[in-house]
Image (tube, rainbow, N blue to C red; front, side, top):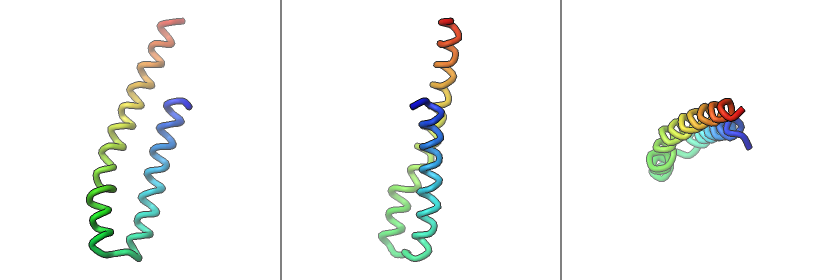
Length: 70
């Protein structure tokens, strides 16, 4: 799997998770759901952004290495 495919899958899966969570929140609103959102879902966004940024940088480095090796 290429980095761009992996990045797309990661971003797409995260978006899908958040859409599903919003639907779930509409019918599940208690202290446990709030805890899940605070402890699991909210901390996930900056980690996803950091991973995507790292994947983009790695892609640039690999592309440069390929050009230099030609």
